[in-house]
Image 1 (cartoon, one colour):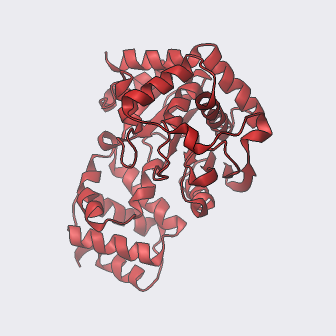
Image 2: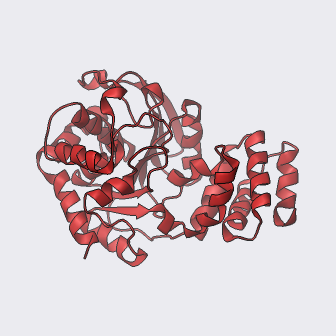
Length: 338
C-alpha cells in the first residue's frame, strides 16, 4: 500500500493518528505521491473509524502548508464562510455579509469556490458583480490592505487539491476533505465565522479551530440545518475565545428581528442573487437585509469587534445605511480588475 501503508493499518485497527501523522498524510495525498486507490482506501478507512479533532486539524495544517500562504496585513483579518451542503438553496448570505463586515472596518479574506450544491457559489456571485476572482497571489495582499476585502479563489489557493478531486468524485460519499475548505484560509486569521450544516460538528469544529491557533471564532448551525444563522428559530453556536469554547443557543427574535422562514430566503442564478445582494447593500429593507445583518453581527462578535450581538446589529446596520458596505463592493470590483 506504499507510502500510506503505515497510517492505513493504524486507522483500520481503529487507532487514531496524531496531529503530525495526519499532517504528513495530507501532504503526501496532495503532492501526488500516492495512487487514487491508496487515497480512496485511506479516506474511507478514516471515515469508518471516525475523524478525531487532531486528525482533521493535522490534515488542514498539511493542506495549508502546501498551498498558498500570506503573511498578513494591518488590521483584524476575518473570514466568514459556510461549509455548504445544507440543500436549502438560500441566496449568498455570507458573501453579502462580507461586504457589511468590511464596511464596518474589518479586513475580510473571503475564501470560497464555485457552486457545488447550489445554483450560485460565492465566486459565481462575485463574478456576476464584476469582481475578478482568480487573482494572482502577488495582488491579493495589496487589495486586502487597500480595499479591506479580497476574494481567495480556493482552486487557485490550493492547486494541489486537483490530485484528490477524482478520488472524491469516485467515492461519492463525504470525506474529511468536505470539512477542510473553511479551515484552510491562506491568511492567519484573527477571527472566523464558520457556518456548518451538521449540528453535531459545531463544538468539534470550534475545537479544531483552536488547535489550528485561532483565538476568536464562532461556529454556527442554523435552525433547520442552515449553514448560516437563521431567523426562523433557534441557532446552535460555539464561541471560541482564547482556547475556551462556550456552546449556546441564540434566536434572532432576542435582538428585535421578525421571524423569517428559511424558505423565504431562496436564491437563484448568479444574476438573480447579484440583484438581491445589490438591493441589500443599497439599503432595501426586508427579509434579505435582516438575515444579512444578523449574520454580519455574528461575524463582528466572532472577531471580538463588538461586546455582544446587539452592538453587532447596530454596527452592521450602520455599515449598510451609511453606504460603506456598497462602497467596499464597488472598490473591490474596480481594484480587482486593474
